[in-house]
Each structure stands twice: as C-alpha cells, then as structure tokens.
Length: 119
Figure (cartoon, helix red, strand yellow):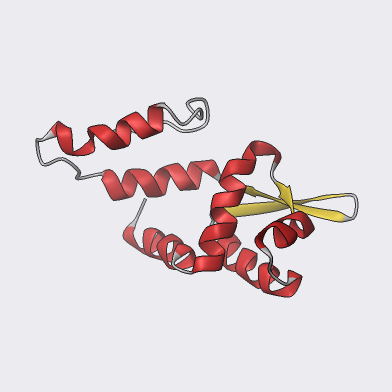
C-alpha cells in the first residue's frame, strides 16, 4: 500500500462514529449489515451514517450492494489487511517480541481465511 492510500484510510477512520461503524461492519463479517440496522445499532441518524459510510467507501474500506430495498455495507477485508500490513511493515526492528502479540491477535481472531498478515 502506498502512503497516500494509507493516509486516506487512516483519515477516514480518525472519527469516532466512522470508526464505530467500521468496527461493527468488521464484526458483521462477509454478510455485512443493512444501513438502517447499522444506524439503529449505532444510534445515529441515517443521513449522518450515510455521510460517514460515503467517506469510508471513498477511502476503499467499505463497499455496498443493494438487496431489495436495503443497502448492505461490508468491509473490504483486502484493504483492511493492506492497511494493517502497511502499518506493521517495518515493525520489530529485529525484536520479534514487539510484534508477537499482534500476530497472536491476528491468528486468534477467527478470520484466518479472510486475513493473512505477513510480519
């Protein structure tokens, strides 16, 4: 991942409501979550959520699809993985104990099929 793309993604996540929406979508998995359900769960107005999801989408972190009358949002796990790899690219400085807890988290998150971190 190039720095400019990482900055765009990090800027999108640097807002409490957008970060909460992103984290909730991560938990929702591949099936995603309808925008209305997401708004109710987060306790935000639909138009506010829509603006926040547009920013996350523009940053390449989420995508949407129509299912009947609903718009379903899902995380773009490849982009999330690329961002995490970018942040950890130069980790450890030869001391694997620094990054070991992060690797343990990645291996125990239950998302081995979707996310592969290379530390």
